[in-house]
Length: 288
Image (cartoon, rainbow, N blue to C red; front, side, top):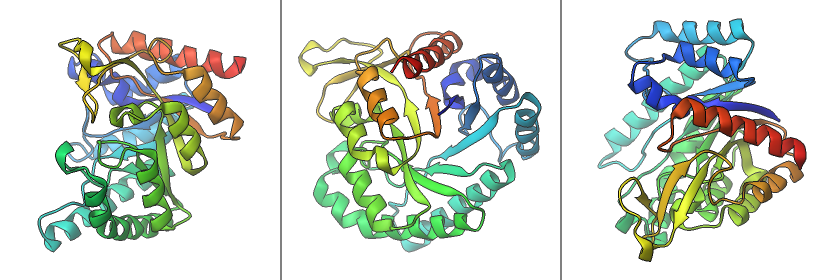
């Protein structure tokens, strides 16, 4: 496997103006990372500064790490056909940027709804337009040799079976899933079971960790709620309540040998947390 970091993990440093995306690439290389996942519009923007595209690619080449995955938001649940088509066109332009960066994996979100609207019935009703959009984008990306993917992310397309359903229906060899081991908890699904369900569909794997508390404990400020009202707080990979070792056994045992991206979104210092998280993943991978 190739171990690296999502640029999103360093959002705190970006927001405090301690680091730019160029600095982040250097920093990941200095920590022994083999790749960095590029998440635009969270700390930096290619739209605001198109010159960053060449600068990012050149910096990665300079320090000898790969640009692994290009991860953007998208939502194909729109009020009308015009907005739906416009969103597809926008995502295709992001595919062009991924290609300019030399990246061969791209995650785009597909849908978002408020939690009361995330029922299985609503998912089945929305599925045809999600399939059509994902197919069109995957076919467009195929000209560049880019594999597109959906992440288990955002409550609506987060459970492992919904991801499986979408990937199966899109039915394109270059459409897979960015498998985030922690995000399954947001819809109260066991990360061990869900990873086992979806690892064969994964184009890239995110390792993250959460503290988990039942709804009755209500730990207060700093925590987010799951779809059924339990509580989560992001933390350093290996410090939380996810059974990281067992998840890693599943990933490694599947034969997955691609990019593993550490993703941090907790309250600890982002640089220290990212460094420790990467070291923990490397150590555990070597031990298993």
